[in-house]
Image (tube, rainbow, N blue to C red; front, side, top):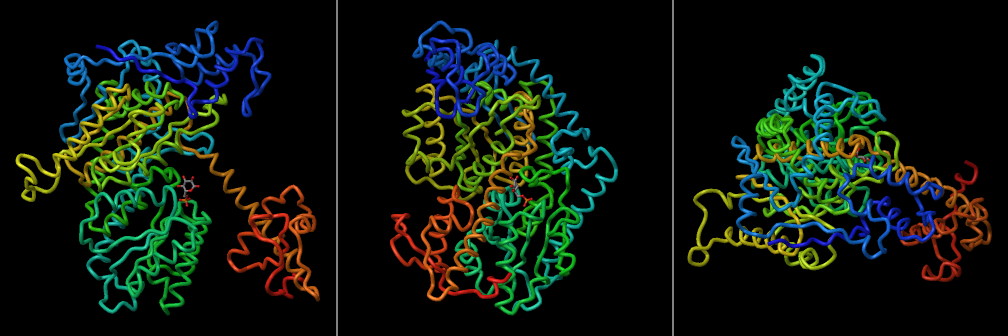
Length: 626
Ligand SMILES: O=P(O)(O)OC[C@H]1O[C@H](O)[C@H](O)[C@@H](O)[C@@H]1O
């Protein structure tokens, strides 16, 4: 009983290296078909070398069958076991169990072979060593010259020095004390009618939002002492919605502004918008504002100078996407009545388990092994995360940042261009079964699945049978098992992580499990998991757009101050901005301003850009002479 899994190596998400290899091997001449981001002069042998250093073991048929036709090259074969008896043996042999955490990891539906595990051994030895050095305080984020210390947060004794240990312990103590005082009503909002804080408005983005959002959804009780809302974007309508929903409760809202750098524009904008709402409601923002940021950042200084209610530190050696167990995640969690010590305990237990240098006994290493196998060590398959529990809905979104920002890198640690990554998406089961599972089962084979299973359906004493012998939770269970089997029967691999219940302890453990898996995998493929140089490009480009908008405004203002007003075509604006090459962006800037009543279209319409003539509604005389 075997099924042959067809591997289309030329999937859209396969690395550029595989594309280049396939092109070069199919080409009759010895030169490569140039790809946009690969140097066209590089000889084929060097690509093979790059591929090896990028982390591909020798099993890749693509490397060895250079004489075959294009079609044959695109299809390599992986064989998946289907004999139920053999599968049961594989299941029991590889099943990982963490007794104290009640957590299981089933990797039996990923088809890695013993030979592959052996081949990977040296890489794992290197990865375990790298992780151990990281935990001892090595500069494991070399580009930024930083230590990587999120593991110390749940076991401060492991910090490389007593100063760091004290920082962690004192911050945790301050979080517990502050949240008790807020919940207990000792610290009161200055003008709330019932004298207590009732709401949290958390302002932050990326790593300063995703962890708190995931944990709130997973663990907040039905009636938390403080309810939480998030502003995680610079979308004015989204911000208005959050503020409108708070209504009069703005007076009893604790605003937590989170930014490690303290200078992220979206977060700054959120803060300014919230402060405006406070002013308009006649409230004193400073008495209700809390900052979580690095010492002496712009945000920290603002909060200090304005005398905000409290400030908590974010440490240089904790990255945003691994900051859930720092003040970033813990403060909001504690204020919602979530047992943060249990979260830390769960994470710490998982950290202990994932230090084991034996792949089979280390759940994070097992995950990394599966990722490597399933995605050929180059991200050739996406990871679809399917938690079968509504409260874990945001786990896939949380993992998306953790995995993709950590692994999605252009260069490896030796400076080779590798365009690494692992795409993560998902929502929840069984809901997704009625949306996109159709494609997963039968469509393009570009993924492997991760099922998250929760054994306990609902709290004890509440269950009932909605038909003889069957509960609502049995259906959820059946859907998960059915989907796992149906996918596998069609050659689609999957990992299953099982927890007993969704508790602070198990959520802490899940976070720690994936943090370590990412760290290990990054080492297997030789990339820095702790920087994000690519994010800067988008930020820089956004800044350039805003700078261009200022020039457009100045040009339009000048023309609008003439008598009579001089409507300008897009070409004229671009020329006067001395930016003819930016004409498309200038058109978009004008269309956006017109849609928001900040510019007037005199002629034409936005559907035919060349016909548009534009001017401003008002002449700003001061700006003319600025
Ligand atoms: O916490 P902050 O400094 O505001 O950063 C918020 C987020 O923005 C950045 O662009 C990074 O890509 C994220 O890793 C980070 O979590």
